[in-house]
Amino acid sequence: MASSVQGFIELPESRYDLNTYTGRVRHCLEISDPFMLLNTKNDIKASRDLIQQYKNGIIKTMSPELWKAKKILDSTLHPDTGEVVYLPFRMSSYVLSNLVVTVGMLTPNLGTFGTLFWQITNQSLNVAINTSNANKSHPLTTQQLITNYFLAVSASCSVALGLNSIVPRLKNVSQNTKTILGRLVPFAAVISAGIVNVVLMRGEELRKGISIFNKENNEEVGISKIAAKYAVGETALSRVINATPIMVIPPLILVKLQNGFLKGRGVGMTTLANVGLYLATSFTVLPLALAVFPQKRELSVKKLEERFNNLKDRNGNPINYIQFNRGM
Image (cartoon, helix red, strand yellow):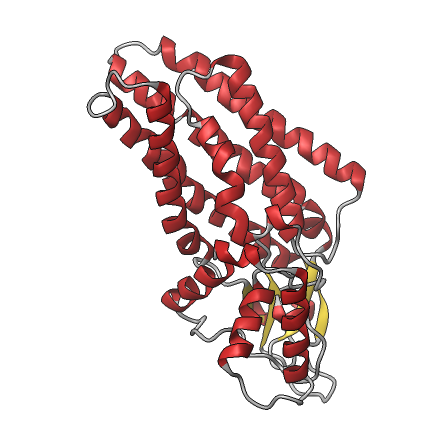
């Protein structure tokens, strides 16, 4: 994000009011804009230089060019490290990166091999996205990454295969209901494993805490485990909110279409409909999900560990609110 660029003048967080849900939605529309993937290294460098000039007092006021530069950096750079997030794992690529995987998981009648393949692929992508966008106060070691990855994959595959074996054996349930429940198996697997994935991949944050900053001047004031719980918990919930419509609406509509418009048509037409439903739902839902919780989370010191209750800045002034990067 642009906030990672060095300078003594604070950059406005957004052109929109991030204290309101509507403002955050409009802001998230910018950072999840897939057109931001078209920016080159030169575009990113030029944007960084422009923002640096503002933060060092060379440019005095925000202009349309500066807002555009900020948008490019917000959708490209990690807020903690300032490093460029690898393209497929940026939030601006979230929908496109998940396209093939989600459509694959939602394909009817996958069988055991297909279910395992797509669940493993999905969790692999989730691990990459979670790791790339996580708070970097305590990065995971390679061993921890591998261990957490296999635990998340195990959870995902266990839920998917378990439900796939249970649904056909349900008694006193109509065939149509079984079909609908079967189509929702990927949803249950994704939700359960997604939560496990976020918690495991960001376990170090929960164990050690994350950096918290003075809201007024952005100076680091300590490490908080309670702030980490807020960050990880809200991120996991955001993933659930995002995945629910994507994994529920398309398969239910597809069942309806297969009994009507798509009846008797080929697999190609069904796949095309599946892709269209996914894209329409995803581009609508992602900004709404990302905006539920602010990226830069503000919290009263009274909600933190007791040692922060009488927190003061270097000038002896009381600090009432801190902020931290929630991660995505």
